[in-house]
Image (cartoon, rainbow, N blue to C red; front, side):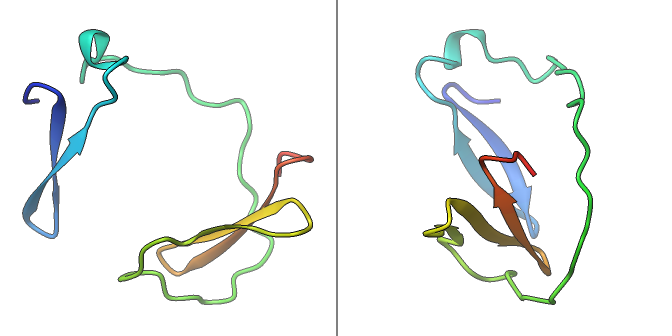
Length: 82
C-alpha cells in the first residue's frame, strides 16, 4: 500500500486504486469484514460479454439496476434488495 492508494494487479499490470480521503487514515489491508447475511441466487444467465467495457451500470425506469460482470448480466431490485 502506498500513501493514499492500493496497488492491484490486473492482467499483470499494476493499477493504483485511490483510497477516499476520509478513509485513508484508518484504512488497513489486514482488516477483515464480516460476510453478508444475504446470499445471491442465480435466476438466469443470458451470456452478455463485459470483459472489455466501461460504464456498465444503468438505472432502469422501473427502479432496478442492471449491470454486467464477467459474462453475467445482473438485474438488481433496489426496493426488494434482490
